[in-house]
Image (tube, rainbow, N blue to C red; front, top):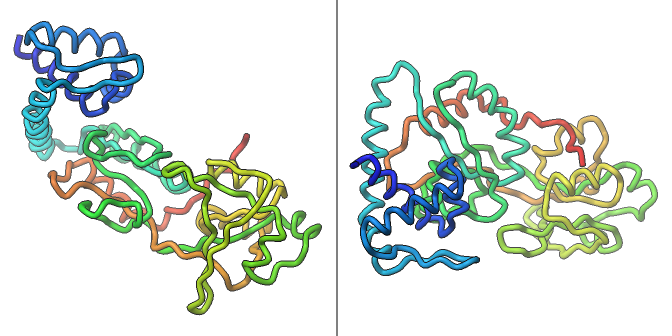
Length: 309
């Protein structure tokens, strides 16, 4: 009976933290009807309503708020207890959940996944592609990977990728039929492929620096997209000028499929950082992943094939 109650409580916490039965089902790896029935059984067992449900939202009742406040530290202690046993295993094991923004996920993490899982077969790796900012605590993520300015101040950070440039680039075919570009201001006379930022729905401003000078350009163009890989593909096809992290386009610059439109102007990013909560013990799978990244740092930046639409 105790096991049944614990399973019901764990399911309730997942729904309460996610504010969604559907997201909780994905997190727990079970069917949506099972989640609904489990929470309903818990409410019947306790004799109180824990969640108010509508077709579009889930909200905690006062009783649900109180139960969640008691259960979260309990589940955290359970995780720590399981983690303590992990130290006695011959090989690290357990679940590692990462929230990664789409560009680094596709260009930097994807090539490393097979090697990591081959080296640590007892670890289960789950990566959530972060098109919008996620909450590390309620999402129960062990760590995330973002640019530094998008990381909350109470997180511990570890540099994942060194500082890099953001370059305005185009296919040679586009440049051959377009006006010459000498400075960022000349971009106003060109068709620029604009990107909508998924985390705040804004159109990306192109930033450039040169010898201490800094300019921001609100570019114009006939195409807007919220996916970096899609923007890259259309730039390769000669639609217009794109603005991309240098590691993502290094191979295309090397083989001449893309050409920088300026020699000296570039945006600057302080790098990508792995970050995790300062309020919890680092689980063994995360420690192993961090060591793996350090050992294989030279492999970071290996590019996947050109995206196919």
